[in-house]
Image (cartoon, rainbow, N blue to C red; front, side, top):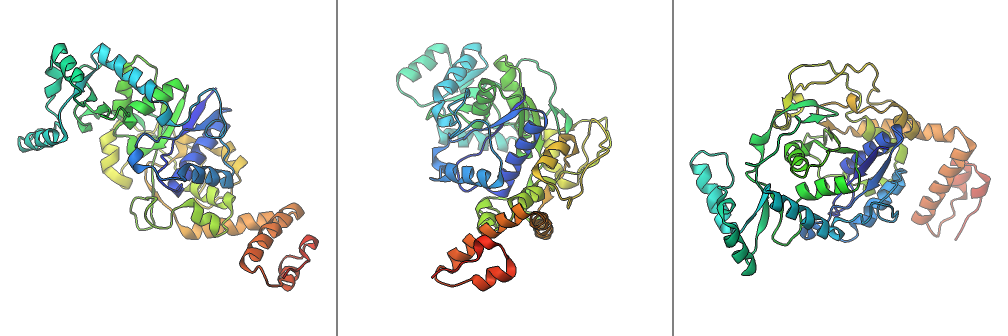
Length: 406
């Protein structure tokens, strides 16, 4: 059975890009008869924002995206907070150390900065000179006993062979190791893992079969495949999703602009309309097959105007204003129909979709009653001591609302 994961960081309110990623995980999992979980990636304590997890859960609940496992829904893959899985990451880092695929680095931040500057002056693309790779076992043991702080680095000069990178959205990818940092850090001095180690370990331990994540991780994709190979683990299938942009073309950020899901909840937008809007932003491409693979660095640097290979021709895909319910999205969703370009969100399209979702809801007595109840609560909250009988009798003539208060 397919098992997917939505893995937000608790660094603030869920934004539209995060909701779209949760939606795509939900659509794909339900389409193939699988399940999905929410995993909280909270290994960076400096970025933690109190209340974030509760806010994410409320946003998903409002949208009707119910995960199968995660916080509040314990299951066979718990715990679902990475900060509660630290022993697991240390165990895997020790495996890499024992096999020679990783080593301890004792260089201070100042020394590392000096090294990077020196390498840059010589025209080298390297970001580290591998000084600590050449320490003897006795030297390493002595430094550890002395309490010197260290990180664990991958030894990129000792990587096993593995199959080339492929992606469910972008197809075959060329090798992109040149874009990676030299001997990337896997375990930090505080014994917390970097995203690279934690995501690989958790995806394997939790039995994740498909990883849907933002295209910003394409550059790190070769590193993650290397880690699977070093640990002799089968990797899941990956699909890197082109990101959402602000209307001005800038990258969407949860700290900039009107992009938090909670803002759309407060303003009364229909959740089905918001999901419809997000799903169609980048879904609907028709790709011609191509023979030449693109590299991850090409994809990252070329931007929205670049052409990339596709494994097949897509014959059917919705346009950007197709009215769709969640069950209809599940039925029609295809990863291969996602565009290779970053997509901007057009507020006018949300207004159009919201209007038509409301019209569909009004068309049934049950839907009208549900809307009336929601509107009643909002008006009462805004005008707690005012009589609104006239408002309801004119606008929403539902018997249950024929009362006034105050």
